[in-house]
Length: 481
Image (cartoon, rainbow, N blue to C red; front, side, top):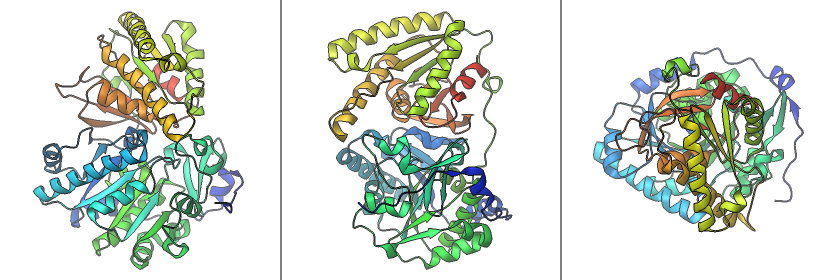
């Protein structure tokens, strides 16, 4: 698109001050009541990497999706559950096949248990991922929805949508998403900041201007849930509905209105960030979990293990802060793997992995927290698919390291979406985990108690690549020392 609109960076404080006052309705109370009294289907969240659990607690995440496992999950009394697809790590053809298989299995399990289903395609709050492919595939299995809800808002990560423009907070500045490093992603890059433009950019020709509608902040804050409901009821079928939100209460009001519309017979499919999911499940936020709540062994018996594969600038800044602050104190051992060596040949990779495993186990036994990080220079291929392939090789290297570490770590932190997904499913053999809560705002903490999992019961932190300030990772490691 040559006519993509450009937007300036704006002041967060000044912009928020000019918005209407937040709606005073008890929207969360209305949501709880509607979930308890309306025949609304079970929410099944297909998460394209594990970070979508970042606002939830006391709910399950599945890393397998065979029909018997899904039937068992549908038979619980939970309002919904996550399925970790990790589709963001796959090329489009493979992602399409995977999402189709999962949707078909979910549909069959729902039929066997006589449940209705609502599908969320949980994606990145900075707009990276397979869009519109995943919603299109889901609708091809479950049938066309009345509309597609697009809601990337995520308060804890500083992602706000105002006047249909999606922003990423950096300090007091709100940077249009199309002008951030996330938009330069080698695989899922984009130019648009206005979500109307983003839809046309990613799905050219799929939607006319008349098929794209907005729930504005004015609708939410001045009209409350009834106004949201009324607007949703009037939206023509096969439309996209952009959700504007600048505070958590905005998402609560939107979801309350959405549930009212669904109770009147409307049916939507969702492409959203994490905030929508927890609100739609009726999950209220709680404070991050402390080391004392986790009952980590004291005195410590082994060190914690931190795996870092994400390349986004925020991760690199967090790793620098962590190593600058702790490596010289002797509390943190740092092992850096050169990506060029890891992808040079299978033989070279095998040699590096063996060496890293040995060093790591020595440090862990000594009670020393250990960071295994990939070199910070991003190595990309000549196109999107080759860049994905390089990322897969690097992720596999980190998985092989984790698979071979026999010392039970005090905890495991995996930094980056693909890294944490592969660490959980391939490195630790997790098939079903419980989301305990958050280790820090927007940073999910899982526990897996299955006998088949490696290092059973060890706290597992899914640390998104693009969440938190420069000190967040270091603060977490220090807080759990």
